Image: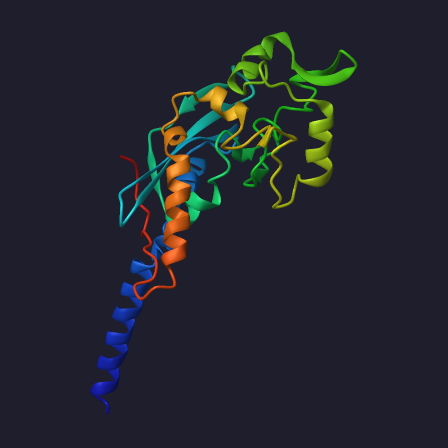
Amino acid sequence: MRIVRPVILIIFSFLASALLISCGGGGFQKSPLDEIIQNIPRDEMFTIILNDMNAEGNFSKSYFHKYQIIRDNQIDDAREVVSDWHEVGEKEFNNYINDMGMEIASRDSTGKLTKTVAPPGYNNYVGNQKYGRWENRGGSSFWAFYGQYAFMSSMLRMGSYPVSRGYYRDWRGNYAGTNRRYYGPSSGGRSYYGTNSAYNNSRNSRSTWGSKSTSFKNNVTSRTSRSSGSFGSSRSSGGGFGK
């Protein structure tokens, strides 16, 4: 028994590790989003927006994100970078599947890090009197950047899709600081923000995900309906970095 017991433990440990890997157990690996945040100096504000998504493969899929990163050291003009593709795990991909064009992480001027999903610019810029003010237009109030920050309006697509004070108050009062995600009002079956919104389509008309989203959802539904079969559903281990 003294000899057999360690051998059994080793075999059990090996099988458990293999099971974790086959079921997407790469979740212990730091996500690309965390890596990006870690590499931005702590004294810089930033806003990270999910710029694009992609899923490749048939039976075993690989998942990818691309990010729009707005960095602001509060001295020079804020600068924008669109990242390369980064491979992410299936769980992380599905967590943000409705959030293209949304802010998924930010850090404000006090160093406070926020990793909840919000409309782009809502955490750092909208409502911040350093950068702009509320202006009345046709009986409604909308956010307007000061002249020296007009480029922020272009980065965040607020010229074509202005932020009304009502939207901001709704987010601030009912969603900020929670895990609830604010997509704005809906019209014609589409929300103001999010993956399938007109806002997102306008900001990234060449999106890789745009042509794949419907077929991907259909495939997910098909896989889910088969998951009760003898072979179960297939899952990707994810992890790693870009293409």
